[in-house]
Length: 218
Length: 222
Image 1 (spheres, rainbow over the protein chains, first blue to last red):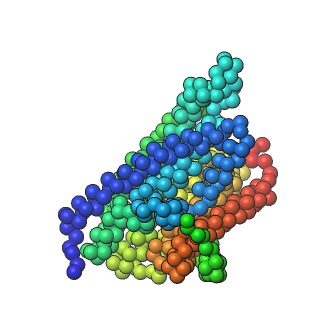
Image 2 (cartoon, rainbow over the protein chains, first blue to last red; image 1 turned 90 degrees about the horizontal axis):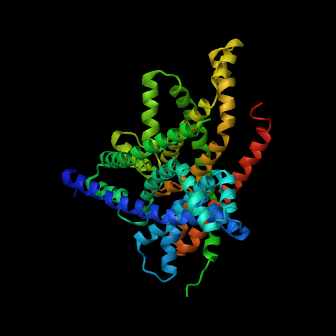
Image 3 (cartoon, each protein chain N blue to C red; image 1 turned 120 degrees about the vertical axis):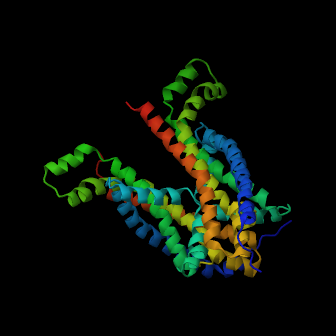
């Protein structure tokens, strides 16, 4: 039986946004922590740590997120866990975000003039305090625009979690489409919802970038 | 303890290679057509003709701020309702082209904007026609500037193209799905497929930087 597309169906789609937001926030927080570790190890003096991080970034930036999701999903059964699409999506998205944010933030840490770190060393600050009080605060300001830009990418990429069966915005749209047979309408609405979330972030990223370029112009 | 068994995966390795070939065809096709679209749109955007700029802006912003998965669903499932239908591989090519065209537009526009005003004025002073100025003074140096961004966009496109497997196109990821449903060795299949993507992206990255060293060897600014 074909269901008409009414207010109810629209509401079902709209409320699925919360799962997209949950996925995005969790992946962003997890990826933020992981990314900080990756960036710090990638810029550390330890050659082994640097090499391991280069390989980690290579693997996650050099393979499709869809395959990472599949491996997390099917890998869970292998290691004896119950298959849970949310957990699998979280693992894959967090690792994915760690690699990307790690690489973005490495650039930001390296963009801080080396004299800053040297001056901190000369003042007797050890690694932790040097990073905590001197290098990272300066790197963070440089990192804001590109991090917001990555957040947009991450938000869009959570749609792939639908393929391993997690019901977020995209999967809910497919479900509604399969009972109403209004693909043009359904996918237009969903595209509009994603756009409404991503566009403001994109604009913010661009504005911050311009502001920063202006502030650092010589 | 789970026992890994790669034998059935390698028995169907030929099928995976066919899929990898389709992935490369789709990516290269989309990149080439997408590059033409990008150059046209970037030219339109810098033209200052208001309606043109507006149309290009809408195109670029809509594509860049919606997921590729939704774009391909819209093209493959949505457009037939409006009387335009494609077979899966054509829909995949269209979706990838439209997608990379938008990202390419922004990259090329950034390249064009990196050309200093004085260069163009020098071109005018030398008596070059507007078309010649665009081609030699703007486009060529701009392409050299944006080459690294374009090549990483291409690799990203190749990885993104795995998503077209959801509309039963016949790319590498879809070949992986086929083998998976025949052998039930899910993890092994996707591990091999992931490794194949990694090899492809690594080879492309080495290839592109070799080209960069050969083609753009002379100094950028002097």
